[in-house]
View 1 (cartoon, rainbow, N blue to C red):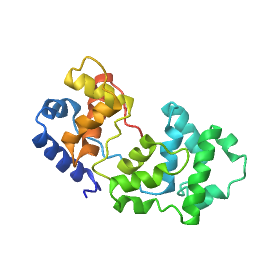
View 2 (cartoon, rainbow, N blue to C red; view 1 turned 135 degrees about the vertical axis):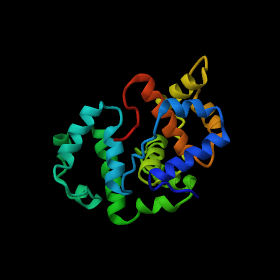
View 3 (cartoon, rainbow, N blue to C red; view 1 turned 90 degrees about the horizontal axis):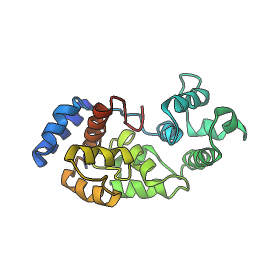
View 4 (tube, helix red, strand yellow; view 1 turned 45 degrees about the horizontal axis):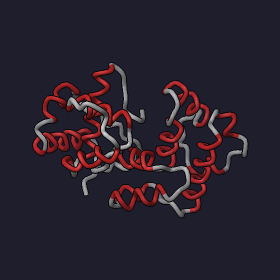
Length: 214
């Protein structure tokens, strides 16, 4: 099982991708260097992904500053110790607050070992995460990519990825998640690098960043 730890791993994965699927060569030229965007595995990384969902980048950053005002890592234990109404002060929705509380409680008790997910096969790691209420496939996949370092995860339900693939391949319409997942099988075992490639390509097309985490 491949694990991405640094930019060299991303470059190696991209070279292999271009060999596997030469159609990606012009896409890679236009996309330019692919960002690593790797965080340490653990509660803070997963919390940051959840906070960033369905809100603007500015809003997510403002909430995150209130949740993590110091330079110390936000741990599950620290989150569990917060007073019950802290989520209102942070600006979180009730649904996100409840999800974060469940994750923090599981991580603090030891029933969920987030760093250990990096060493599990992707299917097993995804099952562990999505077993938690409020953690959907997209959240789990993005965590495994950008915190766990998994090299072979592709969030096919991501609308930006669907649009990017449609634009890159000149498709008449955006592929469904199921269709995109089938297409992405060509890019195994480097599907996480393929996702980075298409996000970067689409970001160039739109002139703004599209990666799901900062």
